[in-house]
Length: 534
Image (cartoon, rainbow, N blue to C red):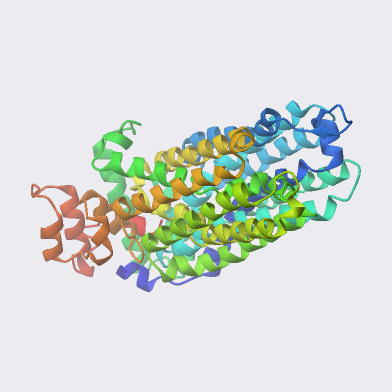
């Protein structure tokens, strides 16, 4: 690791910043996780479902898909605009405003009397908020905390997502016995509490040093770096990072006065990195985990299990517990091996899920095949466990490390929009697909997991224990992903991996500056060493 990372310390402020910002993930998980349980609540079904000839109420595929999916549509647009908003008003204020905007969506939902369209619109408004948070929170965390805990802090965002899902399932389990609107309005209304905690709490945290410095608030940037890294304001660590920030800004100013969006595709190696980020975020959805969180209660009710809320709670508990394990895995093992192992394990689970559900489960009378129902729940839990320790946290970490500072907000917004786009497709079309092919739907996710193993193997660079400047240089220099874990910044490796360049090539100068003696750092700052802060 870099010299900067070795001298930085883990401070209470940095940990608090990461924890409070990650409440944005909790809101994301809570709103996503609560909807599955609503569809089996009698009062909710009588208000928003469709009356059947036998007097019961059900949800058509189109209505259920719209209620679930509009949140993802809102989140898609929220993620696209969040990067620009965060660049204009700051990372903290963007997070705070997004959190308070959740209250507007919740108010629309909870005031719905009998109009399912009103409830769906409320979910779309809430989606705008959590889509913005899904971009602004990882960006704020990666730019603010010391490099030594960056992976764990960004992963905590996913941990809070899983805790949010688990909390929503716990609340649903506790209220589902009510026969009036209390059953769904209490879970719905609790969203106000989480939004107020995040919206208010984040205002007590320091602004991103990178944002503050870029907007001319030099003293604030120095103070924030010092506080977050646990050093004095006049520390050489602070001075070096400030010099690096200025060098990066100078580099950006020489490139162009304003960022052109086409640069995320035309700048050196940016087409590769932008496309990879979009695919990885889409892949997180195509692993199939959210299929269980959105439709699990309905699916497990069809297996003959008496209380599907309990089963859903078991899945949520597995997800939350294994995400805690994932926090350790992020720092212990490499990104590539964990992502490939997780996708392989999920592929196996979905094969079992598909074939057992289609061929062994008696779908007319599931109680006649209890072992098949038990197998479905068991392998669903195993798939969720694999997701929680691999693709759930690591996709956010890899994406936060993937882009240079100049393009980070735009690229993070685009890749996160990809996540929400596929989230919508899965949430809307799942009922249509399962109505036609039932449990063989699992084969779709199994095939996607197999493809993701190959994508990671051939295209994702190993970034564990590397500063963001090192990762940036590795992608620019076209380091072979398969051998990337052994790549170092020595002259021999540079000669092997780097194509011939002119002496003035800024990327060659970047590495030369990185290898310069510490005393030369102030005179020749590294253009991208600011990323060590991010």
